[in-house]
Length: 144
Image 1 (cartoon, rainbow, N blue to C red):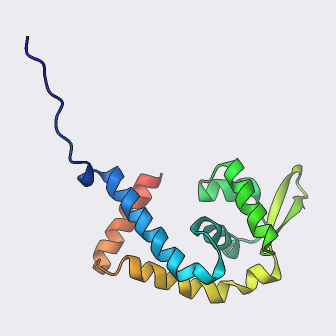
Image 2 (cartoon, rainbow, N blue to C red; image 1 turned 30 degrees about the horizontal axis):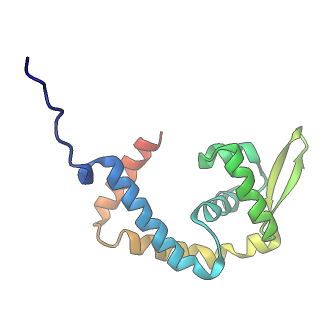
């Protein structure tokens, strides 16, 4: 009886590996651009959601960002400690909190958005505009 060998796999060409390495590169570029602000990509992302819709519930913020509740709590704690957000009781649900930007958190938007756009431009610099559009569409499909 002949033993069948599993097919070879070039790990460096797998979607998972390539996505992980692209994510690492994006984070490195982000960290270089945001070094002076002491914000992680996740913290910046939460601020971005709040700049779009301030005062949303912690659970909605968790759902939008696809970050689990425990991790979300830690991220909000850190942003609160930095004076960028505050938790306010949700009038519709005594057990829930609304996450609200402070004046300091609101004031960072016009300063940080251009930095984020520069980081993104550096990250996608090797791509043609139609490739960026295709990549964005494909990543949205994979996310859902």
